[in-house]
Image: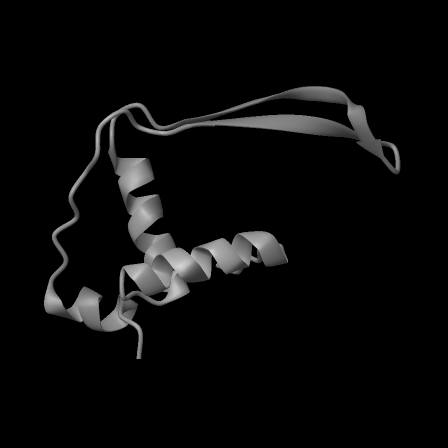
Length: 85
């Protein structure tokens, strides 16, 4: 999987990862695991008429995060994979 982020988002992800002693990919994996596996996670979409560029209609994305915090208990192999070097 290949994802990229704008500079502002990458700066915030780096800050959050550093606070948690994780690499940025490790932080993303932990956060997305919690998002996808907790009740209430949704991503709603709908057209956005003002967002048209090059004849492609814009879309709005509304991310609904789960309502409860979750704990991810990571075994050593995951910790090693995610941790900052």
